Amino acid sequence: MHIAIRPTKHNGNDVDELHRTPIQLPRPCPSPSPILYPGKKYPMPDIISPIDGQPAYHFDLLGHDEVAARLELAAATSRAWRDAPIDERITLCRGMLSAYGARAAANAEEITRMMGKPLAQARSEFERTMVERVEHLCAIAVESLADEVLPEKEGFRRFIRHDPVGIVLDIAAWNYPLAIAVNVIVPAVLAGNAVLLKHATQTALVADQFERAFLEAGAPVGLVQAMPMDHATTARLIRSRTLGYVSFTGSVRGGHEIYRAVADENFIHAGMELGGKDPALVLEDADIDFAAENLVDGAFYNAGQSCCGIERIYVADPIFDDFVEAYVSLARRYVIGNPLDDSTTLGPLVDEKSADFVRGQVAAAVDAGARQLLGDDDFELPDRSRCYLAPQVLVDVDHSMALMHEETFGPAIGIARVENENEGIALMNDSEFGLTASIWSGDFERASRLAEDVDAGTVFANRCDYLDPGLAWTGVKDSGFGCSLSTLGFRSFTRPKSYHLREQSA
Image (cartoon, rainbow, N blue to C red; front, side, top):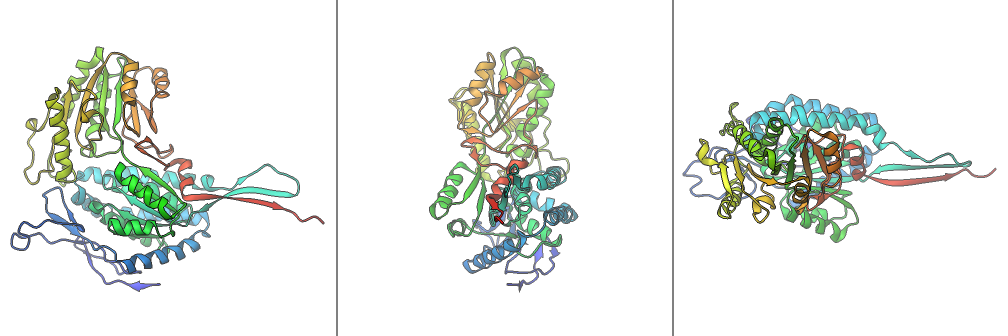
């Protein structure tokens, strides 16, 4: 089914006409005037930029018939793609990377306008994170997807093949719109599947960026498709018994809703990456300046909107004061402003609701006895929207405060004093989340030993807020379940099929 769509405008440039099922590509929203938009509330599908609180882009949601047509196309394409040689799949994914790179500057600006990430960080998400992950996944694909051949047995051939699941639905979050999506799209395509990408409303244009890059790289029509849908339509799609796997990155509540929908009418697997309250333990033998520098970046990069960002720090009593002094001094260096300006190192939060939530956690902690050492009064904040928030550093905190046990997802950090490593580990584990955790120590063996007692999907020593594509990305407790990246990550997009072949006797 090949239906031509009409050309539209995308970020001010003509978009080449694509021959595929009907889709309305995103288009820039005109600057609002007080006459046309008096007191207007902007429901989906307008993308409201946190830079100035104004609509930046508009996109059209798919109707029932369009979803059905794309699903049919994905099914047909997946059946053909499963037979494509692995070398062809690898070449396509690397070609997608090249095609995306050709538009990387414009794509990065779109991301910044949509969700407020400083432009340098938006560029880096492609140049460093996305490139590294795609190249690594392509490098390990042959070995990861190879048949598992059993030992020889006379008269028999026995092996396990990792068959593609068919159609993968990726429901991706907005905070790292490239990194989160690529964790699913690329291994799913390498494994022989078609992918439907339903990106978060705030970063809906990113789904189109991926679809365009795959098409420009020569992908079969329908292999990777943007799926701008509302929640009800998404739920109906999940219940349609046509998908082979669902990946979701988002809130714990959203994860429960998706998992219920998956279980309602299906027997398929789902992966849930649901955030964290990631802790750091700084021991008395740690390099204070090194730890402080990395933990400041781990807490405030991307305005603290990172599932594996640092949200609470426990510091050994003998170095507590020196660490806090170094930490506050470094945090003061952030430049808060328009994320399109090169000088800006801390942009706005994604929306006013998120910024107000962080403000509420900080205020509640102060009311409960915490001391705020750094906050809005220490910086010059833009007044273009209420989304701008300074780094918030608090001490005299404890686990009775939401700041220390509920996810913050913003630039606020509580630093607590601990008497010894045992107390530190106990507090690290005192959480409903378990995504990542980090231990900072000059004694590598000590850090390695303590890591065994930490309840988390990934434990770092002297590092934080980083995903190594060679390691499994997973979580425990309310951080979700499932696995992406590494050799193990390919298993999510395949199902084992056993071959037990006996030669006929003469």
